[in-house]
Length: 167
Image (cartoon, rainbow, N blue to C red; front, side, top):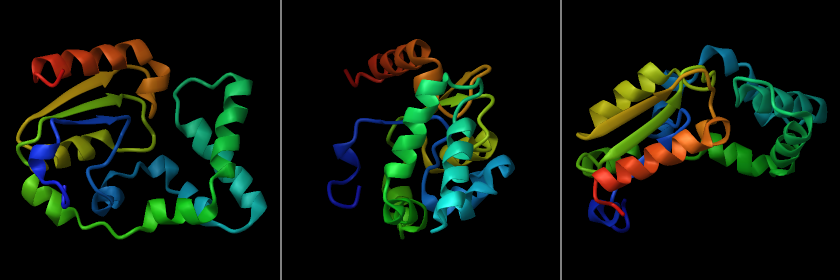
């Protein structure tokens, strides 16, 4: 947004409890996963294993098949600790986005059982930041609508993009 301006983006799609900016993370973080943050940031291997399993389990409502769970945990653990640290702690000036992004159309696809994000808070923030916010709540799924309900998620994105003439 800072480099190219608001006309560069046709729209924004938030899938699965995304937050508008890191500035809002404390307001949006679900109490169920608060315990994960210190473990995700830990340098201790045993805490990292616990964080990987807890994070992966919390990404979906229904338990993952074991081979999929191992793949996701491996991806989590393989990420360098520095990358996780900067993902959570990086400095991000939300005011630039909020000053310029208001006219950009937004689609939020959110699982009703997401334990990463208090979706009511996140949706309320999005509606304060943007003028045109459309929300699709997907019943019975968690933080990963793209994985748990890919057909419905893809259909929602395509329908929204066509309606907004972004295709």
